[in-house]
Image (cartoon, rainbow over all chains, first blue to last red):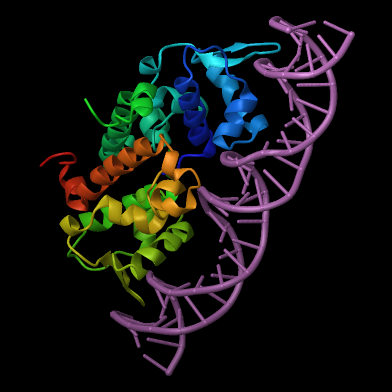
Length: 138
Length: 138
DNA sequence: TGCAAACCCGACTAAACCACTCGGGATTGA
DNA sequence: TCAATCCCGAGTGGTTTAGTCGGGTTTGCA
């Protein structure tokens, strides 16, 4: 039930970008220093975030990254799915066919319920909530 | 956000025991065959479950394992915490002191909310719910 | 009394994954 | 031009996972 640093750092970096949304691109070096993360490692996380259209990059001097959408339009779930892969707790829940026991598996219902609750929280929490300290509200 | 096979198999085995609760001990070999799990591996999972008092073992011929409490008194959370360790999604949430940024960490609130929801589901789902197909009810 | 069925325990291992690091290339503003 | 910046692929040491293996010890039953 652990999240890796990819998810942790990814959300930290995106939150950093959200705090500076609308003020031009922020350099990787700045984010890394501000959040206390390895710059090269963070770079690896930005790649999929860009490819997935969550951030835009500006190359060259004075370049950097910026959110591709407003903070309220990006959920923590969006970020985690991109940097961590699918969020389901067990392979067999995400992909029913892969589970040989799925038909008679009594445990399946707990995992399904769990996945639903996890996705509820992560999809209903946006960067805007993080920035305004209103996580879990409305 | 993945669960390991320890958690998956642990719940499967405990559910198996719950289905045969009150009919004497069930041999590891029987559970392993019924659930399609390696017997030796399952043995490793039963050790902590026994040490934690969730199951009782009967040694010698005709021996086996049985639940130490009624199925309604054992939650999925109980099982997972024993075989998987603490359920929190990030180290820094479980142990605030270990997180250098905890004070100013905006992301922290999401992880706390997430952990709370996960524990809610797992602690309110018992083996009895699994056996009766009433997961998520009452 | 002997034996086989069962639990008990510690050590080992191959493969995968994690959290990075490294080195170089392409792009662009000043 | 040059320095800042993003872009990309490859490598790496350590840890974890999902087991296997080989031997105990205990006990019901013939």
